[in-house]
Length: 250
Image (cartoon, rainbow, N blue to C red; front, side, top):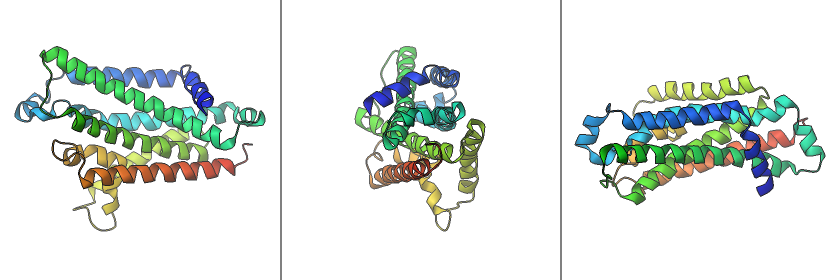
């Protein structure tokens, strides 16, 4: 499995889309850190300084995670190399999971680099480290946000197996986000038939102020969001694998 993941990560180095996503997100992280747009909020709530990274980049990372995953997962379908890989004896389960895990590693690593860059730029520009929020809570918030992005990797991976066209898979994945935003707008007080929308990954990310602030991290609500993301990852990965294993690509 490790060798397959390494191969997938190596292949990604030659995709211009991946380089574009990486450069755009890192550039955005650095520019936001230098922006004074949220200076008033930080002045009133010092603990929000590093949390602003999550507020301001959540939607961007969600959009680009789906775009990059749909592109990479569909690349072997577009190039018609799936049959060649499987014909040499590569296990179907390992092949599917290695591609999924490789993409998760890429997204997690990019998100971590973006966060580290943001914090570093803030420290250098202000000349001091903000300790208003404990390191444990800050890392807890980061891990929960990253987990939501992992859910989008699994979802985009499943979509790519059902729709073996890069452009179409990207459009369907981004449409998921658009529909989620629309449904959430009509969710009201969070009860009723649309109450489940509070567990949709982007909705969780956009409500980081309800579970990711000092004193709210590691509470029951926090772990509920983690559990819902884990279930979504397992369900999407399972559906995607079943479709792939029973398709005509072998």
